[in-house]
Image 1 (cartoon, rainbow, N blue to C red):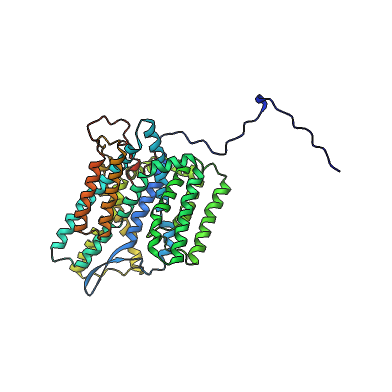
Image 2 (cartoon, rainbow, N blue to C red):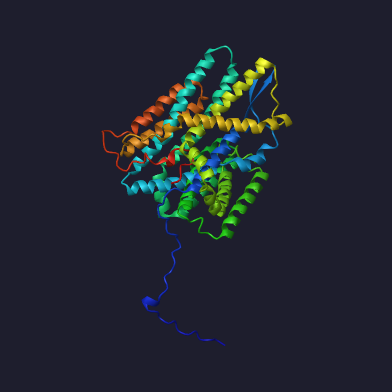
Length: 458
């Protein structure tokens, strides 16, 4: 028997229920997000601690030796699942960049002006670090007290953090274009970058050409930055808790399976060079945890005893990032001198005696880096001069900066490489200046959101 369906009643416009939009409305531009700032500060502490675990000094028959202490250590790969925070850095960079770009646009700042502000805030503290390292390495090399291999190792260790400077600057330079793509198609723009990263990994594994993976310098980090846009607009927090928890757990399970199958290294620090889509899975889990705990994190960040150190790190984050390894190298040199003068042997990495000394070693690294940041950290808060509105000049500045950093890294961060790379950074800073004296209307200079690896979320 067929039952007739009653005719639909036509409702008047005033009785029609509004159809909710599938796309959540962007959050209004508000003040500082202290929860984001706290997480970013904690990430920087984690990075300094990780570097302190990685660098040590021992002595053999030939003298003092700089050690990469996790080499062959079974305890290290599992630890990197907790200490690899670069994916979260780039997510927070996207979060901060979205707010900074929209605030700047509301004040009349052009995309070129935004990029110029990023170049200034990243390169000024970096240039001081590079210009200090060059003469110091040259003076040490001119003497007879330090073995050439030790000096070469020290230069290489010094240059390690600089990879971030070039990659993050390139991502921030592309942020206005990537934000425009996000505003047109938020899901598709993110999905396209994720798909590109997975495709690069598939081709890398299938072809056995590891260098092919360096194409993910764009796809992986831009995808994480793009995820930061979603976080900034509240799209992730708007998802049901079960969805966020399931996404985080699912990403970790998939990552574990891929590592067990040999697709990715279980040492997640190794997945930085070249970057792999393992970082996207890890970043998914990190964002899920942050989103689920965000109310508690925000409440904790408001506590005065937490807010003060968070503010200290936030205001000097790029300085801390760039100077923590030089501080560690000085500590290692002091250890080598102690060994040479007293005959006291340094404990071998991963031994019980080595682990007993790690808390003190990490604490000294944190305190030493904080002391340096307290003295010279004000440099990254200096207002920039009137910035160019020329897209061509801004693009040239970014290319010069990336080329200069790449040159320092490729040539081993020695004195000669620094002597060649530093002038390119100076030229980059000169290119972002306005061609003629003008009023700095809508400048991003007071905005500290690019003064650190993840950007200061405001």
